[in-house]
Amino acid sequence: MKKLVLIAMIALVSSAFTIITEDWKKVSVMDKVTVEMPAEPVEVNTNGGPQKVKRCTVADSTEMATILLDFTAFGMTEEQIEGLKDTEDFKEQLKMGMTQSGGEILSESEGKYKDKYLYYQFEIKTVKDGKTSVSTNRMVFYKAYAITLGYKAGKNGENKELRDKYFNSLAIAE
Image (cartoon, rainbow, N blue to C red; front, side, top):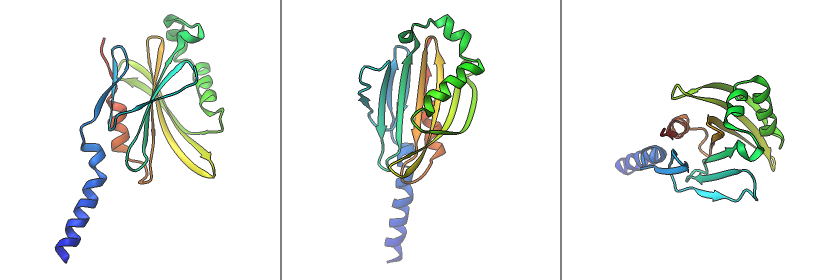
């Protein structure tokens, strides 16, 4: 009986790490840009919006999404984005856009992804149908695009190792 309990516990613990160790799928975000996801994503209908969204959900309801935003859809050039992207006004406009549906920014940071591409990272709390959730969104700027990687923890809570593996899988081949 003790062996059965031990085997069951080992199976339970190892299943918690299955998401991290499985073969992830390379997903094309755009030409020369890929990301890896633990499941095949589905394209989300954005009703003609300027963004392209791909999302996957894993067993514990953890969600990961890529959002490709083309700033040329707003009449902006790569040079304009280059001049604006690291200004405080631009960052404030991004934050306002992300919270306009009622979210609250809990934390923010910025840096250089792969020591080259500016990124902003925001942890956003939302309440929907009485349920509170927190998502982490990293927006990486490349040419006239913003590539946002979103991670929302599932029933088992936040898994920083899974989130970081996802965020660090972004590849830009130039």
